[in-house]
Amino acid sequence: MVVMRRRAALRAVFALTVAAVTGAALSRASLSRAPLFDERYKGRRIQGRRMYGDELDVRVDGRRLHLMRCADGGYLSPVDHYRSYPTPLAATRAAVDELGAARLAEGGAAHGVHA
Image (cartoon, rainbow, N blue to C red):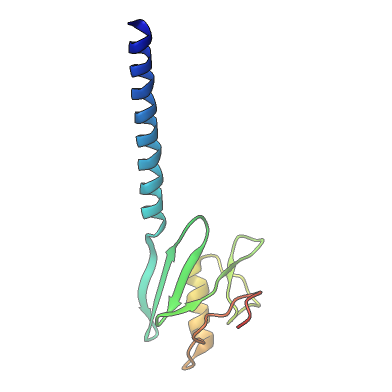
């Protein structure tokens, strides 16, 4: 009788633990896709959101802009890769400044990626 109660209690604790861990993971995943920014800058729509971990999805007029994290904690892009910017928003705005009237390539090139 005591063994059955103990097993039932252990099952209940296990089920609650699984539910809590799953709920925490799902809420973190949904929060991780939250927008960092979504605005119009110099006539362009710039959007940025955090994906999983530190991965970013940054877009200028719907086209992907690859941002790379620097050793100093800043960000740079292939459009303006000579200077590090403190935030993804600042790096995206600098890329728009550098692009002028030009558009990003369709593929959203990144370091080490070849079409």
